[in-house]
Length: 336
Image 1 (cartoon, rainbow, N blue to C red):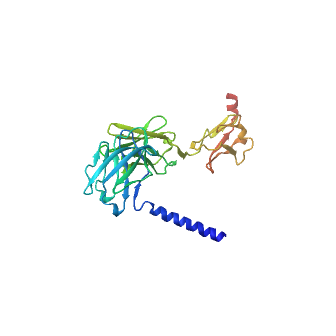
Image 2 (image 1 turned 45 degrees about the vertical axis):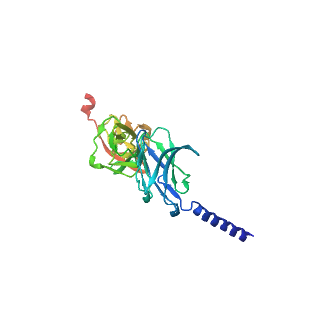
Image 3 (image 1 turned 45 degrees about the horizontal axis):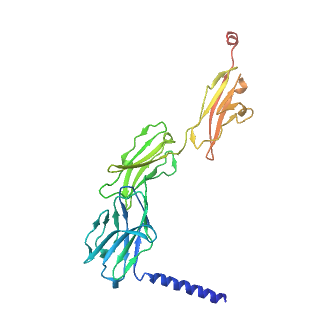
């Protein structure tokens, strides 16, 4: 019974596939992509191709419709065909890109896109009429798309700014800017900016070698279409580490106060500092605060090597300083 059931299932699946493949009987319309982004007031490029049975020749007309819901569509474009050519290739706010239907291209440019989102569908009318049920959607985008990869100091990366397709008469001008957290603008090398475009999107790439000064700064991408401008920006997060060092006097007299500071800048932050004296941490870290080591009334027993140690991203960093303690002479003791 299991074998018979399995065979039955396989037969049904194959039968369904064959039926689905032949369901359109040679009719097919495809959109690429199925969702298109556009800037309000500008244009959208819908890529469309179609096929139809030879028996349906000649085509009588082509139709575009806008839909707010299934079965709620309005006619926005229709043209009759004469000798396989459209009588018009432009009507109102729609321009058909390839009026020669023998090339099976139904791509169009829609002008003056409104704020509301709609879906569009295409029909071919011959001896019978065919409608492709799936639709292409147009979504309004009020800002470009800015992609910033992970940044590390002195490691070259490419930042990407992409802007939706404009109207052909107003190609976009894409500009970049970077400013520090102190609001100072950083001059960019135009030779490090490249632009390319496809049928639907314009891209601009900024080649950047990040520095620690740019951490917590802002990178922006401005796109201008004629008199219309859209823009966006992101905060820069740069991984960096600066050299660890110890600041303080290295030669003291007996009775003086030892005051050492371990300086360090990094992102992400490093661990709290650990102090060592001649290899030991005994009684030292109880005298530290925020990277500072302080010992009052030093004596000769405090002379030696002091080390500040931190952990940054699983790496151990350290700096050292040698402290010399000199004895006060009898004269100095009585004078002081």
